[in-house]
Figure 1 (cartoon, protein in one colour):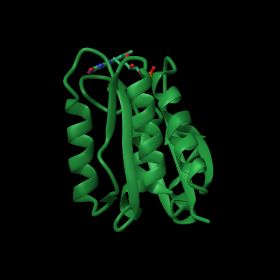
Figure 2 (tube, rainbow, N blue to C red):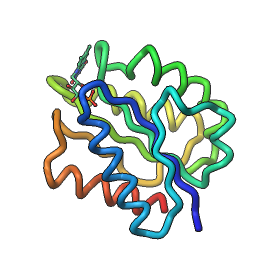
Figure 3 (cartoon, rainbow, N blue to C red):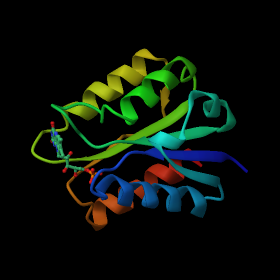
Figure 4 (cartoon, rainbow, N blue to C red):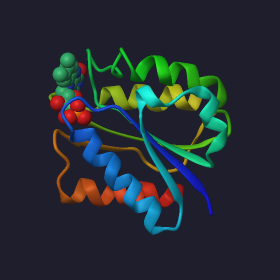
Length: 140
Ligand SMILES: Cc1cc2nc3c(=O)[nH]c(=O)nc-3n(C[C@H](O)[C@H](O)[C@H](O)COP(=O)(O)O)c2cc1C
């Protein structure tokens, strides 16, 4: 059974709803899934999982959330080479720039982006939740 972590930060619940759907998709495919917030995750845990889904909304000016998520992710980056990961998150008024930057950062880290990232505007609708479940399934 593959072990999948869903690691997320969410201020108003939109990315959290996406995280729950990602977890559901991975569980339905038979994975053992841990859902943890950015504050609960540390680089030492990266090696414990076969795959990791990272979720963070667009904050600041097209940036990752800077108090909890960004420091956690920065600390994990040295361990992502060759790792199966996927990215998801919600945004507001932008055009997804934060996700494009985040993806290229992961590529520079040598991570294996296992599927297309999922982004959605504010609260995820049914299509976005379905895409999140697929993202989870592709990591399982
Ligand atoms: C402080 C702050 C900064 C934000 N900056 C951006 C931004 O640069 N681009 C954007 O598209 N949305 C931005 N947003 C909107 C959020 O990404 C959006 O509301 C998202 O749904 C929040 O997800 P969450 O409910 O998981 O916290 C910002 C929101 C806040 C509160």
